Image 1: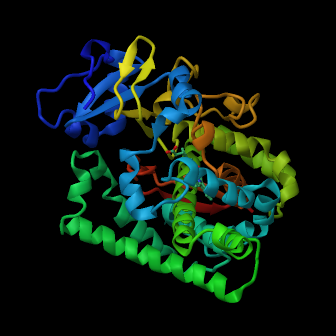
Image 2: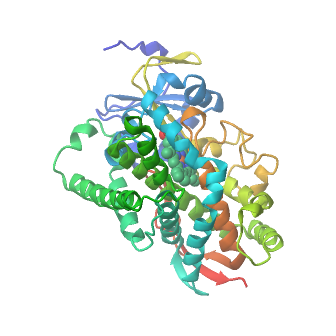
Image 3: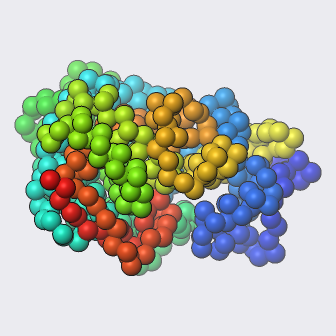
Length: 449
Ligand code: HEM
């Protein structure tokens, strides 16, 4: 055990309880992080049981961890629960293993590949709208989830899983409801006990596994290369023999991409509909762009560069409600930052939510103003004060996929539908694995034309 020089630890709240700040953090993680950043500044140390946690709340410090000194950090302990569900996929793996897999999977996210997914994306979006009726009340979170599942199934597996979407969404909800437990000390042992929550987790995991395995087997049986991701992974097996991915590795990558793809995108879209309903001027400007560019037809790839305001709306929505609201890492060795030492083994937290609402970087941080991104190409020019997809070598591989899907969904839906928030439906944050709306998002659909 290394000794910790307490005089070099960053400042932070002390706790007289053995579990430290566990309950405050679990009760309201975002509120807790905001409060300690306000009280102690941009580098704050606190404990949950024996675990040391350091919040970094300045773009320069975040850059150090995600990019400059990224080799000194692993996903580590915070991703353990995700590993239980996803196995050793791109999100959870480390080092050479991660590098090798990333190289193999990257081609599925090249621009021309993403563009080839557009007809499938549009088909799934149209199918969703085909079921809508004027004046209908619906939970937009469910609508966006089912649509995103259908798109992920079609583009990643060339499978039609529209019917299974509610079951998949329920299984993911059950599996991820346990994720909060990861902040508990000894959570790795807790997971092995036959507790009711654990049994529900493993049952939900089994259901997701079965669906994904069935889709992989279908791809394998058909021996058709449809340009989907799983065909690409299976091809690496055929072409490289023992150099390709094993069946288990393919399973882990497939389930990782499938689950990371649909929950994040559906969450981002749900918040976007809510924000548009609360900001009629921005909504009118969006409608103007869509009427001008699309004039009543569904979008195609060539329209994307002309849907500038639509992308600005999305950029601003992911600023106010970044689906991945906190990005954790674990320090491998002691890490010097400013005048402090973060001891090795500590968890470092960086929060897009906090950064995106910081008045030092945004003049009116709580205001929905798509023009924030007028001069930036959807946030890509700004750096570590805007990082919904993270930054550096472990940033989101699916980012271009997400921009494409979300832009097409916003454009296709908003040109035909005006979506109003049901006024008495409560809107609260549920920071679980992603930053979801706690009570879903009840909205009314009104046909525009
Ligand atoms: C709005 C949509 C999305 C958001 C906000 C988002 C956000 C993120 C973030 C913040 C990370 C870094 C996590 C970390 O460092 O711990 C990440 C990683 C990742 N994302 Fe996304 N993501 C989105 C969509 C997607 C999609 C559509 C896919 C797949 C089709 C995807 C696949 C992945 C994968 C595989 C990783 C791990 C990459 C690596 O470590 O090499 N994401 N995402």
